[in-house]
Image: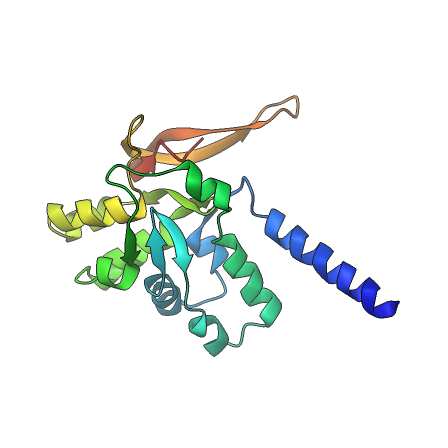
Length: 195
């Protein structure tokens, strides 16, 4: 009987951890705040993305820094998206699988760190990022390639919005949280996912 109770507690804790990130805007720096800058960039570079959502991660950086299993699981869950989220958005050009290390190759370290730390997640999709330094640091074709991988455009509907970031506001009467792209110089917002 005790084993069953422990199993139920574990399942309840896992469900709570999974749900704690649903509907919340979080930056990569907030999620990985316990890691030094170099390790945050290394962790993000080890990701593979499908349609701007994390498909796989290499968590060796977290283990190297001595993160506990629970802390590592919590971080990994922050980057997960549900199957419904992933299926609800198919970008123009169809599904694509991209390796972040390849996408970020050739980007100066300061620009890569600035961009990767500022990436903002919502339900496993990247909805906005600080892009001013990145745009100044790479050729236009490379800049476009990076945005296409990280924040792909929808087949139809809204596009990327320059000088804006994804923001959330709660209604005063406790109603639902409203999200949208708000003016923020030097950022880029994906209107298709910031909702």
